[in-house]
Every structure is written in structure tokens, then in C-alpha cells.
Length: 344
Image (cartoon, rainbow, N blue to C red):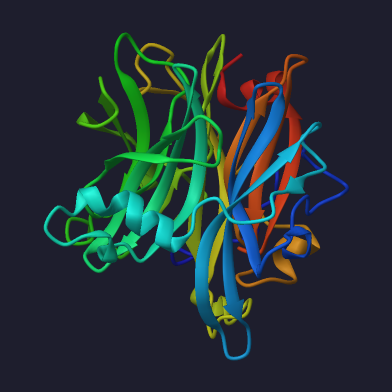
């Protein structure tokens, strides 16, 4: 590192990108779609289910027209079939979220995006971000069919990147989150990973710091939760995203300027006290390298993990958005991943 600028970063050899990447792109979607990425993925009732973010845009000059959430299913986690319409639109979000603005109504909700899926208490829970005129809120919804949703919780601004653990700790549900303390930190966009818990998934408290930017050698900017953690015998295996900024990077995508790089980190949280980090890789698990990550897309050099599935045979499927444009898959052995975050 020189003058706070990080040099080249590489992926761990323990992770293998799927040769068929991207596994989902705009061309696979049967309704208007431009950028298909940052999906939540889970196994439920014997099938793989993906809820993906879809941004409908004009490219030159760039203009965002709409953001919605689409649904895809798969029998093998590789080949996906997309449903014929979005499952959550901007209008849906305004209608479902109106109860959180008792005196103003759902018009306060401008956009819903970045979904994460957790099966908790046998129920499908969807975490997501919501843009409003008064800051970003993190929401939680439940569904039993992936078509109809009930919004049950919305955070105060500014908070997002929320993910739920798939098991309760005692009687309490647990979530990782990323608040935006703009005035409380000396550097712009220096955000950390926090934790909170709840007995009813509506009222959240006991907030505590889990991981700070200063703990991550491959970040000089913000970090935040990625995919919902998975339980292993050694602890909660947890992915997170980390950014570094280099003013010399220039354009790097469709936007006029894009100077950030997003990498994937990995850590291990204590099973009984997930606020405690018991293992952390000092190098990124994944860094942008493939052509669909660095050479093309809306924002190049961006990896964002949104889904992680531990298979019975020990394979870990990692689903991630690439270049804010397509959805991709990488795999690794759970034992290999644990070796990165545990001491011999």
C-alpha cells in the first residue's frame, strides 16, 4: 500500500469460478431487464431459488428507469429459469411499505433492491434495501410462495446490507447490518459491519460492532455484510464485501467515473456469540479478475456476494453480482474455506 492506495489483489486459489459464468444475465429475463445482479439465493423445498435485482436502464447517456426484483428457480443451482414477471416492483414496495409511513403513505418509498434470502424458523425471510427521500432503510419481508410478500420490519435510516442468520441464538433472531455514520467517522464512506437481535423480527436492539474497516487489510473504504452466514461445526462462515478506492482508476464502466474496487472477504463468527469474530482471512477470498468482472459492465471491478449454500457433500456455492451487471457462481470446499479463517 502506498499513500493509502492498495495495489493488485487476487482471489484465493481455493475458489473456482463456474465455467458457465455468468449464470444469469439480462438476456435470460423474459421482461425488460438491463442489469441483473446482487441476488439472494437459497435452497427451499428441494429446489434452488433466486431473487435478483433488475435495473432497467438506458445506457448512452446512462439513465435509470426502474428497479424491480425478479424470481428464478433451478434444479441444480447452475441453470436457472426466470418467472415471467417481477415479483416485487416499485409499486408493490410502496403498497406493502405504506404502513411504515403512517402519516405519509407508500409514496415515500422510491426503490427496493439488493435482496437476501434466509430460511428462519421454516419461513422464507427476505431482507432488502429501500431508497426514500429521507435516507436508506433496511427492510424484512416474509413469504410462503415467493410471489406474495408481507413487509414486517423497516429500520431507521441510514442502514442497509442486512442479512439474517438462519438459526436463532437462544430465543433471538440475529442480523448483520451496515449503518452509515456519515458524520461520526473522519473519512467519507468508512462504514463497518454491525449486529443486532430481536425476539419478534420487528423490534431490533443490542446493536454491537462486529468488524471495522481498520480490521480488513484489503479495504481502505467501506465494508458490509454479503450473503447470509452458514452454520459449520467451527462457527458461522460469513462472507462480506470490502471496497478500496484509487482516484487514478478513471471511468471503468458506463458511469462517467468509477474509482472503487469491490472484493469478497471471509470471516468466522462464534456460534453462540456471533458478535465475536473468531477467524478472519487477511486477504480477499475473491478479487475481480474474470473478463465479465473487469472488462465489461456498468461498474467494472465489482464483486458482491449475496448467496452462499453449503451442500451436503461439503461444497459451498457462492453467488455474486459481477460489475453490477450479471449474476455469477463460484464454488469451494467448506474445509478449504474454514482453513482460511481458523488457526491450525
